[in-house]
Length: 235
Image (cartoon, rainbow, N blue to C red; front, side):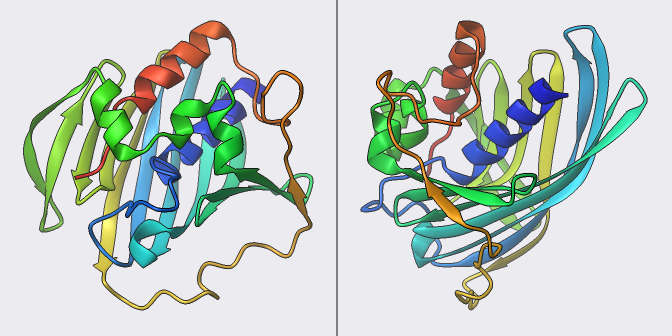
C-alpha cells in the first residue's frame, strides 16, 4: 500500500511540476481549467492492481501559479483504497498537501536542485537537451492539436506545453490520464487556487541534500523516475 502511495504522489507531482523555474513561462497559454479522467492498473511486483479516478488542473500567469487536485481509487488484491492529493506551484515554490497528517509541505525550487530529485526542477530547455525521447507526431484532443512525445516509459500529448493526455508505465503498472473538459484563457481566481486551511511546514535540506519527508526510493526507482522526467517538456 505504501509503495502505491509513493508512486501516486510522485506521478501527480511530476504532472504538476514539469518546469519550476519561476522566471520561465511554463505554458503557451495564460490561464486554464482542465478536467481529466484517470485509469490504469497492472501487475506490480506480483500484486494485481487497478486504478480509476478524476483530476483537475487550474493555472494562471502562464503556469507560474497552478493547482492540481486528484482523487483516485486503487484496488489492490481486491482491497480498495481512496487517495486524495493536491499539489500547488506558486512562483517556484511547491506545496504538497498531506491529508492524513493535515499539514502542507512546502519545497523551494533551489532546494530541489541540490537534491536527488533535481530532475523535478529542470527548465524546459534543459529537459529538451537531456531527454532520450523524441517527438513522434501530432494528434488532436478535444479540438486542440497536441505534440506527441514518446520514450521508454511514457507517451505524452502536449498542447503548448500543457499535458492533455499521458500514458505512463511504472514497474508493471500502467497509468493513463486524459482530458475530458478544457477551458483556456478564462478567469482563474486566487480563491480557485486556494489550499486547505492546514499548517505549512517548510522543508529544509538535511546533511545529505535530500528534501526531508520526500518519499524514499531505491536506486532503480530513482533511475526510472529520472528517465521519465527527461520526457516532460513544453512547446
